[in-house]
Image (cartoon, rainbow, N blue to C red):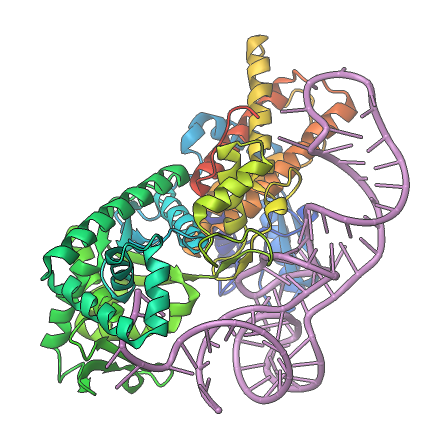
Length: 532
RNA sequence: GUCCCCGUAGCUUAAUGGAUAAAGUAGAGCUCUUCUAAGGCUUUGAUGCAGGUUCGAUUCCUGCCGGGGGCACCA
């Protein structure tokens, strides 16, 4: 639609002998200002008038009227015919409505969640998990072939800490190891020794403890993915990335990487003054996360030759990732170009609530259980509430998770959307059982009376498209919330004007709303209970 | 010290350089009693400060104030 109008405007300008220049077709925030509008800039009133007159006398069926407005805006009001047709289109395409093929042929890999074996899956992992899988869905709806990957830190000092704890029979191996590492020099040395042995796979006893612990950890993660509805296509491990990464760095030592204090580093500030030096291979000869990630990029591409690789992680490694990309640009320029880092904020809880027995770490499961308590044990509602809270705002900002707000039944919550969807299910079912039919012919209902629900429904595909272009799933959340509000409004208003509830047109709108809500929630990964 | 991110109604958040800065919630008032009131209507209320660019700035630039994060062997 947007493109059609853009073309229309360009043609109009051309036939008026005006340079097309830059203009943006957009939705006015206020529906009274039309369904679409554009602005030419400058303040040539005469020109402005000429365009409006021209467009009005050459308008296609889908435009009802073109009006000039103050400040040089030109507003398009779409026709009733268009809206009726769009409702029909929603119903016809059903669970395909909203999909487009903009990214057809693209192969996208989204890496997210990345929990570390031997450690807990805490609330911090919920952010990348929810954001990553939603971004993956959004790209799929835009026509791309999408694979989801999980990268797990199965080697490194944190693992050594946990193994140290396991070897001593500690009940909570990781916290015990972490504490000992900080507090006792002797333990620190032991842990570093273990770390090396894990890399080398050289000690029988450690291998046994390690393998068993890793297996248990992965099973534990699997159970959480199941609950959250996450589906990974690939699992990568740091132990794999490390090996290859180290080779890559060593091959380029003296060229890209330099030796310094017996470690191998990359002086990123040489290429960009805003960046800093980072260690790629430690003085103990072990690859750091930087080198591992370099190796990972290669492994990923060999498994799945992507055209785009998205890595979802926390904000705190934003600068580090820039350094990594700078290094990748020199080693694998073609991969660096395809890599996009998507940093997100932290998930925090209001202080004082939910202290965890294991210390200051709160597991994802504990949070889910806590939310469940508030919703009569309904897992689908609890998961939806959590996902909604994460997705409702722009990626990158911190979130203070307020449990009570997350399960609020009014306004801004996942429950509200799930309820709106479930409600239309029963309306449709009732109508169906009474043999009522739907029709997109308005039968006496005018658009004014329907309060603009159609004016939102047809926009769904645009929202999906924009969410993909800007990595902004929150556009979809905002849209669905607005749509649900509009539907309530529409429904309440129908009661007031006394129209028959069995109006075929109303039924058609209800059906269309039901479809869009379902599709939207599917993209967000929010469960859609049929009944509530 | 330096680099990056953030600062919008009481609170939580929106706003591809555009129109009277948008919602939810909280506050005030009103509304049904046949279909889910988990609803609807009305109302109060905001861009940290000072400049600059622009026809037009929450958005871009500079400085300041305030909060968070990174800055060599953790990830």
